[in-house]
Image (cartoon, rainbow, N blue to C red; front, side, top):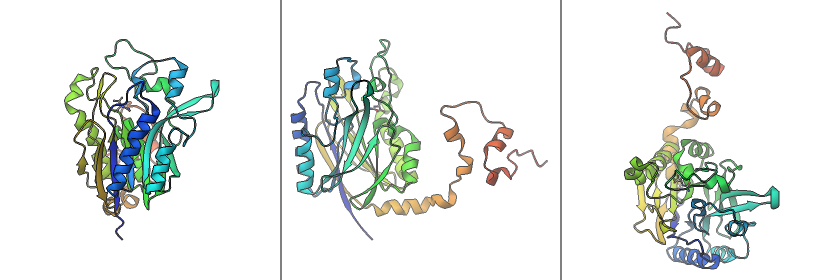
Length: 334
Ligand code: CDV
């Protein structure tokens, strides 16, 4: 049964450090209204869509830091967004900075919420792969201090039923790792929404500069194909507080094809009518229940980083009885 869903990546241009929250919300509401006029049902805003990407600065000024965080969601400053969504019947993904608790018990996360077409929060995700350094490093050409401000997400990789679709969420750096995509795919995700803030140049890894767009799309295209799902990725782009941020917001089909891509570095709406059912076609092609071999993949969870190659004896002890009943050493029979 066909059930088309018209989605939009609502790319944002830069947000300055001293931007008023109210002015940012006005920009988001205007993109939401435009999306509704274009008959979109779901709009994806970037990571940290309410503020500048402040982890490029080190600040210990608590009043500045707390000004970047939301202590509840929704709250009076963002309510125009929720009200507009409900009035127009448009759902949205919003990346924001979440603060839980107070004083010494404070916990801060780089989060995203999924809001349904009635303006209610259908789900929340907290960024798991928090990149960068926990301290200022004067040797670096570009500071990326997310671990100074944020804890690793502790909600796993949930999938939500929303707008008749199984939807998962990721945030920026998560897209570069295959594991979260697989975990979402194993829960039947048909659509993954992702906001990002990615510098267009890496001064400390200059040999990657020529591949920035490639390294942005490559893991998402592979993940879309390997897990049979759609991806909507939305950038905070342009020159923000002296840092050039890449655009390239895009929509990717389960075939791995990029079906829409942004063309500016400013506020821009990128729309596409997707067919969630196409995800099923690719999921059936891979038929994971039949062909995956989790009993051989244990090393993925046992090891964090690379180590020495396993010996055949180590493999034999690691493999589940289902596999280790068979010889793992090609010479074992001879
Ligand atoms: N906001 C991010 O997570 N940005 C990272 C940086 C560290 C490059 C990214 O993967 O794009």
